[in-house]
Image (tube, rainbow, N blue to C red):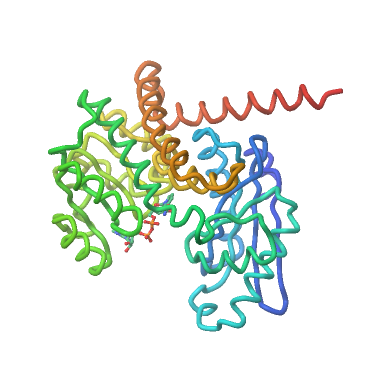
Amino acid sequence: MDKFGYMKEYGFEQLCFFHDGSTGLKAITCIHNTVLGPSLGGTRFWNYSDEEEAVEDVLRLARGMTYKSALAGLALGGGKSVIIGDPKELRRDPIKREAFWRAFGRYIEGLSGRYITAEDVGTSTQDMVFVNMETNNVVGLPGRSGDPSPFTALGVYKSMQACCKHIYGDISLKGKTVAIQGVGNVGYYLCKHLHDEGANIIVSDVSDERLQKCVEDFGVTVVGINDIYSVDCDIYAPCALGATVNDDTIPVLKCKIICGGANNQLKNPTVHGLALQQRGICYAPDYLANAGGVINVSYELAEGGYNHEAALRDIEYIYRRMRDILRISDETGQLTFQTADAMAEGRLKAVKDIKSILTRR
Ligand code: NAD
């Protein structure tokens, strides 16, 4: 991969490598864009097969955060960190664990506030407590905004309402059938909203334990992991993996709407976004639908501290943004993700232009 060429093409600001010899920490941080504010994005701890895979992941994820925060109206830019290694090994060694995360915290502190971290796949709230011993540039701490998943699920639910209004002329999910792939943190809370409103819920998951909990709590119907795509339903909600909307699945989908919490749902956005449009399936851009978590965590940075009510109001606003994007896409013939991208890029450009005016003299 030609890294500088790629960074230039997609407007990346910074890619940093960090190594700590005593703990073996190998971290990479990518700051994609700080036009709207400091970059914010979680730290993913993953057993990457090689460095190249880790770099590709951090670049892709950081850019995604820029678009997510821009479209959500936050004064935040996009960034992300990845750590190469096995998080389970570290959890078995409590003494090394503290030193490891404090080394990471010192490194984050060295980025002088241009990047703010949080938990992500493979990291926990307790890890962030150790990071916080060395830097204040960390969010998602206990006693503050807490677990982002219920807020992400609320944003997905609001997005579903906007899609239903667009397709069926009514926001109600009562009597609608929703097929949820993955009932982990986000999927479980999404089930709760849908159950409360009287939707029919079909789910799949690789974890029997997670499925059992949803059967007991919400009376959901369970199907096999490969059957979730072709079930008769109004909405397919990917809440597990990326790239599940692809050449193999699009032909068998029976839904009218795709709206879920997973990142990067379209395997190839242009190809598969177009295929959905041609099949008359409404696609809710994933990075708007799943922005509830980052909106909530951003309130930890607000003056006066975390404000739960204000965060909820802001997440409710996802409904209007989604409604506008679906309407504009219909009017212009653009794919929904293209409309979302154009809105995010429009905001980035407008703010960048203002900043250049103010700093010209
Ligand atoms: P999670 O790990 O708690 O849940 C994912 C679930 O998917 C698990 O129960 C897992 O067993 C299941 N799963 C894995 N492979 C599967 C398969 N092939 N078929 C069906 N189920 C499968 O993760 P989460 O926090 O609920 O996040 C879900 C998705 O939403 C992820 O893509 C994540 O990146 C994205 N997301 C999450 C948040 C958040 O606030 N947690 C915010 C934005 C985006």
